[in-house]
Length: 425
Image (cartoon, rainbow, N blue to C red; front, top):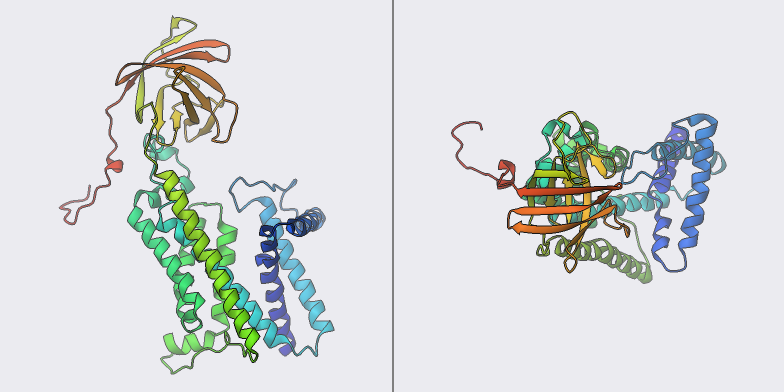
């Protein structure tokens, strides 16, 4: 029984160590990024070979993701870590049966996990405090039929609609991070944190948000730390029995320099996770909320007249590639109701980024914010404050649009709230 227990401990030690990978912090130190690059390439080689030999998650594995944490490579890496952890745990247990350093290793393991989940709580908590993770729905999203959205985008807009709710979510996550920093409040932090992040995990699962694997790993961290004191939690919450304070997070530092190092490391951690995250969020919030100086007023523009090569064109209701309206939104973003794949096409709309040359009265349409080359450009002219004309060459055709700014308003954008509601609306 003791042998099995030691094997499981060493398995979890290796699993968490490989999952958290604390050495990746070296990438932030100038001149040491080659260490992490070497590790990344080496581990990728192992994952690809494991996948070719017997995992067969997918061929070939996708290492890009573009924001997704549930790529085929991520899952193959997860399975590889489990296999390596189990194999090396057996080998470690066989070669080190007389190892007396397990308590020390155990302390450093739970300390690593504790600070890791605290950093995650601070990172995601602060961006929610500033309502930056889930922004309020854009005009393009408001103009999209509800049934055209995928579950992930639908859930993002659900949270982004209410800044107070998003603030509350961030406040709870930051609170968890603070509780985990102080040894006396670790049990409370773990209980609250498990509730907070299980909710995140379940939401990711139920709305197909592609952070399932990562959120599951965070929940595993909380469950592991709670399990090591499971008897005390059961006595207090279930059996109504007295219990004693946990001592597993206390490590006897007998020398003065050890205590100084612990304080210094904690201060560095607080500066990195709280100070830098707070600074980044303040800077990001300032960029997001700069006054809108776009020459094209924000709004939905309906097409009054369309000419192609100087000939008036009537709209074909069955032609999905026809441009049916223009939306110019805040932040020099916009969209067109069309299935034209020239643009980034999502949810039945073609999204674009635009830049204006005010001196030449030209709009440059781009696919991405960082694109240096525009997809095409058009001259713009305001006939009056609500009438905009666009003219330019697109795919060798000369296009002319006369757009009328719509006075349409979206009820969802009015942020309605009523203490008294006499009926469901």
